[in-house]
Image 1 (tube, rainbow, N blue to C red):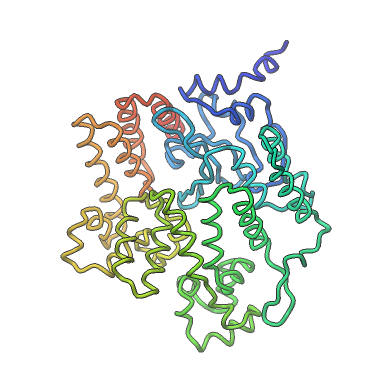
Image 2: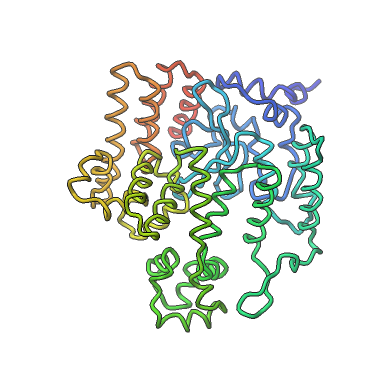
Length: 448
């Protein structure tokens, strides 16, 4: 029996030993049955082979940029990954999608089967439904579907994904002309059904539905044409166009006839946003977790639009506790190139009196106008707090602060080495051997 053949069925054990982690049954099966060797046509269709994670020297991570408690499992071929995120007990706490441009991230689900189904449902391919659903079918075959909910959902989904199927099933009238939804709109409609019928990936899908609720006709036209190309076409600089897409009420009335001609959208479609729906989804997310910045930003701005400044300030203040990199799509609402990409900070600066600003030490640091010094000050704020926790033996709290030092306002360059070394020391002190090994792996990738 050859060495490669002997290794089959032992990948999960080797990974567990290498990193001191505990893998759930579906991830064990993914590796040991070598499902990752098969191919699909989904957004994240490129598995990260286990031998890459086991390699010395390591070469699979954007060293120091990816979240330091994660190991990638899927890649989209452009640098973005779906990763396993681990807790202090060494177990997988959730799967997250990390964007290499800007370092933002958002959770998908706690279980691999929900991740694979979610990624399949939002994907389309000319190759047909079987190519899209291969991994989803594998993981769902391992689960009890005695009520037939997946089977029914899968049948209707496969019907929609057939290349010969007319998108007229989802067509609607826009501007008096029969048009078809974009692939993104179709994907969001399928995801809404997935949440409604199976309850999968709730936080991720509500994020997608929130984005869809706030996407104007102007933004859709921009995405279809390409951002800068569209800006050039309408003769508007990119920062101004970004502001119009974030706040469509800022579009000058004199520009509307020209935008109507170029986009084919009516004035109402150019500006259309459903803030009631967006707020509803954001609040539903906040009911199950409050550590993400984007739902606080959405709920806060929705409150502002209703004239409820007190409620808005409360949401923004709570949002300060979340890592800035979880601001996700709301990071684009900070349209000035020099301002911090944290919408809660931006709005609190506008809404709070100067004397109330002093009540929030972090807000004072994050409100500095000079971008380079501000970024370093935020990092130092979290490093100092982490070191105080280290001195008092509160290692888990220290780890969380060092985590924020690197992944609240993203840090680049040699500072990352210091942050990762602190994470290694804090996790070791907390007895979290898995987090220690993963942080060492990230450091090795950074140093490579």
